[in-house]
Image 1 (cartoon, helix red, strand yellow):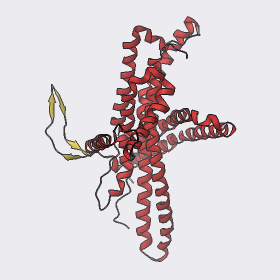
Image 2: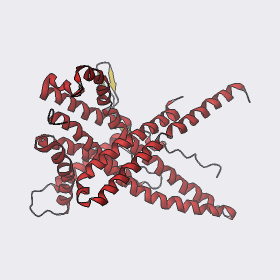
Image 3: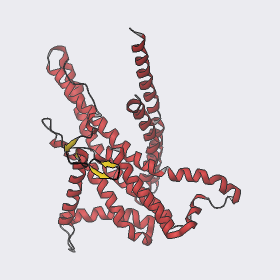
Image 4: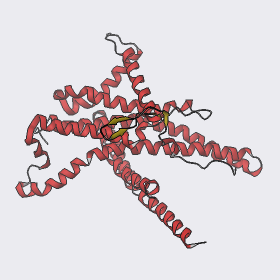
Length: 275
Length: 84
């Protein structure tokens, strides 16, 4: 018991190098091009996506299983989000939203599902979406492409977004800073939501997983300590349930990210209609 | 115990107490999610036909409510890991 390593639920999020590559020099900037576990997970996720859609995207009227799954995924974005929220004007943006949804979905699911291969000290899973750098990149890219699209489509009129209508001139000018603040905090919330959900879920799973092992080992030492097997079994039951919950969260967060991107796009695409 | 060590101890315990207090902000998100899903269920039972069409809005509301709790979660993480 004494020489057991301390329980460290944050250790799983440490980025470390797998393959050392020479750094890239851009001006005075030095970019480390090494393949880390994070990069490896992202490459694996991209390969899974491309391979799946290369096999599943067929144009048959009677779909096989793969095509049915691919079409169901597409309908989540198309029928649940783009058509009801954006309407016909949103057709050009379906590919971006669908890609965003799929990337987050695959990376989320990989971090939970591939854990079954984590035996004997091997570590196949890495929760890419629980790195704030990754979620912030996705959020900032989404937010600023929408923001710039607004100016491209509507020009300076787009600034009217920050001046609420029906408040009079003085009211609108007073409200503008608050409106701006609540607008520009969006990428922060978008990034933190995905990051926090995935990080929190994985920390909880890791904690209960280490309870199973630590209490189980204590229980196996015999005597009165055998009672520790009860909470160990309880933790095991809980971690099964938590894995189920994490799968739901993984899909839900991918959906929510795409849904919020759609809502933000709606202000640009249907600018000036209603609201 | 030497005074320098007790200062470090005090610093660390204050950090952890602060993190625990910050995590209490998630109570609000919990209540909010309860209200959200409770009201959705109530409305869905009263008018089952209209329930499915509002599901996207439900998850959107869930995401926005949850974020408020996640802010306090992140603050407590910063307190534990971000402050030396």
